[in-house]
Amino acid sequence: MLALAGLFLLLGVVGLFLPVMPTVPFLLVAAWAAARCSPALHDWLHNHPRFGQQLCDWRDGGVVPRRAKVLTTAMMSCSTVFMLVFVPQKWAVGITISIMALVLVWLWRRPECKSPP
Image: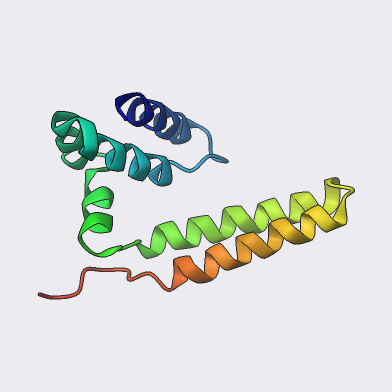
């Protein structure tokens, strides 16, 4: 589990520098794995100044900020246009767009702020 946490933490860090690669989903998996094997790593992730708040918000209520939703929607839209133009297998494009649409429906149904206790 520690190796899995390390791998997904590394992928999350790479995502900070590559706009086509998401950061937070990788960090969520890293935090999940760290919770099962390394309390110190888990605490470090949740107290990190850059992404700790997003991890805590997700843990405490599945919260996804509106900015993240808009950015995800924009990136998926750009990917859709790219695939429609450059991928010749239209059946594969259709399946991929369908999956992205389902993910976006799920994402936009997530709360944007913590509900009051």
